[in-house]
Image 1 (tube, one colour):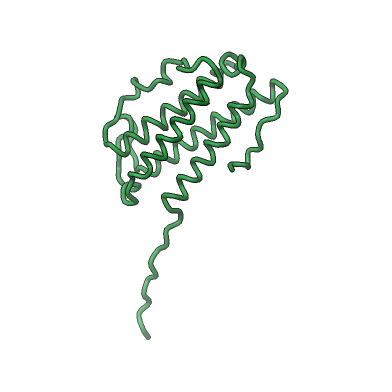
Image 2 (tube, one colour):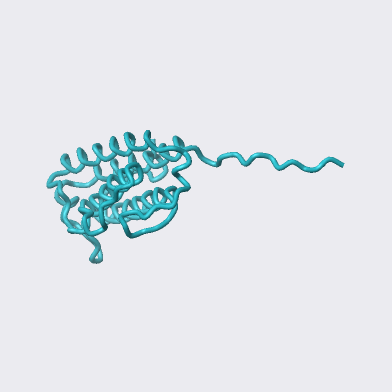
Length: 169
């Protein structure tokens, strides 16, 4: 009887597929931002939660500074992240969407510099959170989903139908 040869483990998801998944969520979050009336985007809250524009600023801060940190190995501290100020740098929906698009481009540009083996490297994101690179990226995606869901609650409470959650095209 011949010994069993272990088959090579196939990759579950490629870096390109993970980026597409993340950008799909970003496209959906962008449509969520677009669905908000201008004033409510920056002022409306429910149950003591932050306005959606502030949550969006958090998502952008983590994503932009995070992907740059992965690529360069240089991390800003958590205290330096813009979202901790509690304010969005944008004052209009148009400005917020333009910033969102800039971060989307930054993610794409930095992603192109990542090597597949980097996804399993241990990093200290923002000089605070230790873990493998892929886990940090998944956290940033989870964080975005979480805050987008809060935005959906806001929209529904304003009588606005949010974008279809399953449509990430």
